[in-house]
Length: 154
View: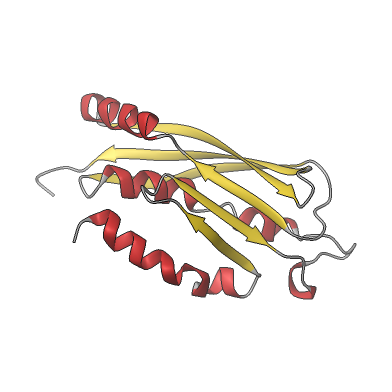
């Protein structure tokens, strides 16, 4: 079983991951080649803030690991991939159900692989948008992902 097949099986259980389970976050779609992940969160009593809209921490949590997962799974076991930093810009209050899609084109993943094979390590920035049911922008998230070629001696 290859790495993509293993991760595809693991994604069946990601909604049971405690930070997602207890904040109402759900992974609702993962495409076949694991380059696109869609996440949704309904507004519930346990994920709203003092003014009755989505808690900012929950909005960020729904965006946290997905770009890292996409790169890690697609590069394979010869690479180390970590979230390095993030920035979230809250545009307007999130009400109702919000959704975000994280996508990295396979061409971009192959460019990253080629670059890392030459220079050994680098960081890359990716952007995602959180939108409400009407498609209105709620927040933008910028994620910096660190990628390094594994040391063969280690």
